[in-house]
Figure 1 (tube, rainbow, N blue to C red):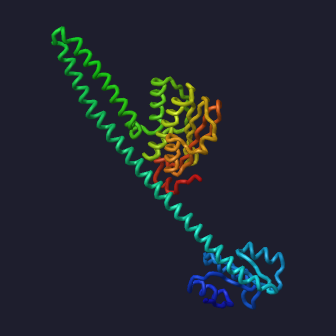
Figure 2 (figure 1 turned 180 degrees about the horizontal axis):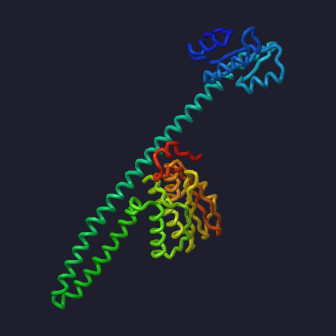
Figure 3 (figure 1 turned 120 degrees about the vertical axis):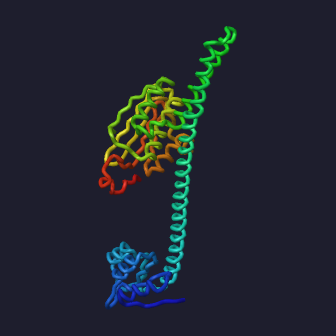
Length: 340
C-alpha cells in the first residue's frame, strides 16, 4: 500500500499530479490546512477521488458543510474502527461510479456514431433520389415525349385500320409519362432546391388535395428566409410523412400545418382531428414512419413530440434550430442553438 501525507494546498496539488490515488483521508482541522481547503483543491483538480473526513470534534453543521463540499463520508476519531470499512466501501463505490461513467460515455459515443451513420445514410438516400428523379425527368421523360410525338406524326398518315391502335399506344405513353413525372416529383421535388421549403410545401399541399381530397390549413411566418439544404429536405420529409399518415390512418379529410420561425428555432406542427390512437402504443416503440420523422428531427439537433388520443386526433410538434442563410455572414457567426 502506498500513502503520502500532505499539510498544505501546494503539497496536495503536487501529490495529486504525481499519481492516481484510491482515497483521501483528511482531518477536519490542521495547523495550516483544513478539510474544506483540501476539498477545494480536489474539486479544482477535477478529480473524483473518494474523500473521507476524520475528526474528533466536528459538529453536525460542519459535517453537513463538508459533505456538501464533496466529502463522501466522515468518521469520528472515537470510532476509528469504522475507518477501514469506510475506506473499502468508498473505493468500491468509486470503482462502481467509474464503471457506470465509462458505460455512459461508451453509450454516448455509440449513439453519436449511430447518429452520424444515420445522417450519412439519409444524405446518401437524398442524393440518390435527386439523381434518379433527374434521370426520370430528363432522360426517361424526354424519351417518352419523343416517342409520343413520333406516334402522333405517324397517326397523320397511318392507314385507318391502325389508327385506333396507335391512339391507344399514344394514350398509354401519356399515362406512363404522367406516372414518370409523379415518380420524379415524389422522389425529389426540384423546387425544394430552387424555391425553398415554403413554396415546396404549398405545392405539395395542392397536390395532396387534388390526389386525396385532404384539405390543409397552412399558416406560416417565413418570407424570404432560406435554410440549409439539410433543413429544407428533412423538414419537407417530416411534413410529407405526417400528412401521409393523416391520409392513411386518421380518417380525417382536414389537417392543419403551422411553420413558424422565431429566434432561430423553426417550429413545425401538424394536426388532424381524426380517430387518433392510444398513446400507450408509443411505449412499445414508434412505427417506421414516426421513427423516421423523429430521427430526421434529431439529426438536425431538434426535438420531436407526438400527442394523440383515441377519437381526439393527433398533433406532431417538431422544433429545429436553424440559421437563416439570407442573413449577412456576420449576423450568423453565433452558434446555432441546440434543443434538449
